[in-house]
Image (cartoon, rainbow, N blue to C red):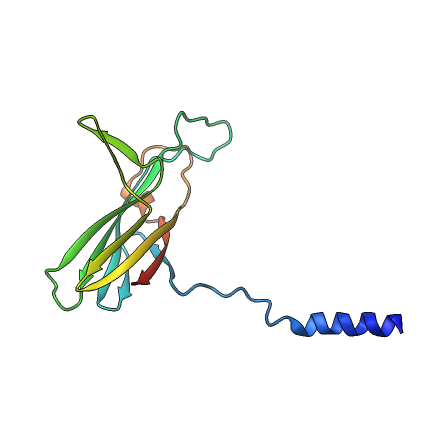
Amino acid sequence: MKYFAFLSMALGMLFSCKSDKIEQDPSVKVIKYQESISLRNGTLKFTEVNDSRCPSDPGIFCITGGAAIVDLELRSAQDISLRKQVRMCLGECGYLINGERFSIEDTIIISLANINYSLILFEVNPYPKFSPPQSEKDKKDYTIKLKLEQK
């Protein structure tokens, strides 16, 4: 009887699992450097990256963690002259201008052609290694991961 109860419980657990696949959130997008994705009413392009994060190489120590700053461009499909530039950042994103502190955020809500979008920057890859300064060739390897939702 104990074995029957155990077998029944084991079979119940086995068949209660729906799937071994992890569902991907369709609002999370991965965009390569200089590439665009489609929006409902336009496009979103990853146009620039400036990565000053502390390199991940062993033995490298930094005073600050640095920041990865990305520029995005939203373009309207209805009005080609309607473009919006967005700057987003991961890391230490505050800076001083004339003694005043400003910051660039990893989250923003922006409107394009009367539709609001929420953008949340999650990742900027690859993480830097200790090497000479970035060149355009190096930038082509960058991707960003962001959550894009229509509000």
